[in-house]
Length: 215
Image (tube, rainbow, N blue to C red; front, side):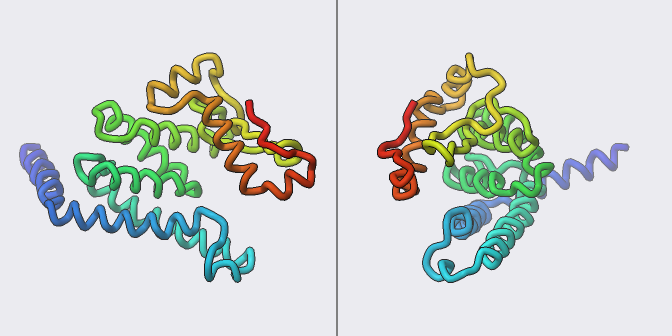
């Protein structure tokens, strides 16, 4: 038993020692590079990708999100959640974003969410990021949200943003959002509504909707 304990301690110490200053910087750059590609895949086709068929574009997106999930899971398995102390604010945000887009792997998202919760409580991770991931996991499971960060739109009517699947507790949602560093829900929904309207302005004008349908 003593040998096993000593081995475990040595193993954990070795893992910690490997995350040197150089390794931290390398990890930051790797996460940043992955996010650059992630953002290409997360939005509508731009540049050379405009010529892609729907099938080609979906294959590209799937390959990006899948390959990134494999890599960030290896990072997570080795270091745990790479918080601010390990990769800085930007690096921690980048890691979260890559996990956020790993929707095909809900079990992995839940593992990160549990670890991230502990880091948020220590001030070592972004609370608003945690809220977005929490809601994402719930919505992907067909459940209602705590924070209202995941929206859908009334595309056949006014284009207004609404919380997808609804809210667990609409009365206290703003108190909860404030606790995690988020603006009031109405402000957020109006922002999302405006962005969606601007991106689809011609379509909504043809429908007779001349301005964003704000709350």
